[in-house]
Length: 101
Picture 1 (cartoon, rainbow, N blue to C red):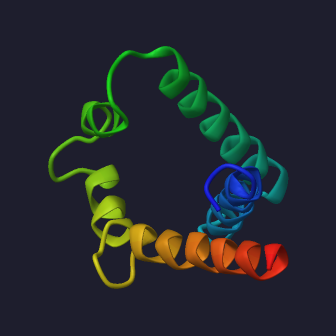
Picture 2 (picture 1 turned 180 degrees about the vertical axis):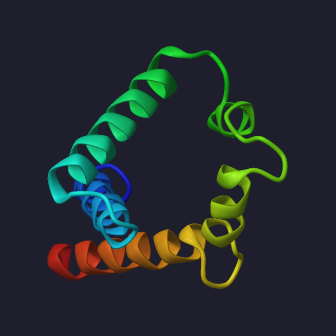
């Protein structure tokens, strides 16, 4: 669920971020480089910082800015990232239980 399958979730996030960058006009290699660097940098900061992930997110989000606009989509209760991840983790956990039965 969260840990065993988690690396694949992060790798897919990189793929999706790069694809979104391409859709907005970035060259494929640049889009992938930026997506990889963003995930690596954010991951390292989350790993090293004593602050919560919530506080780190707040720290890098300017009210009314571009990040806030993106987060409004990503954090939508019905269609956003949390709902999608809940479904994904549940699918992995359900499959794990099936395999263990």
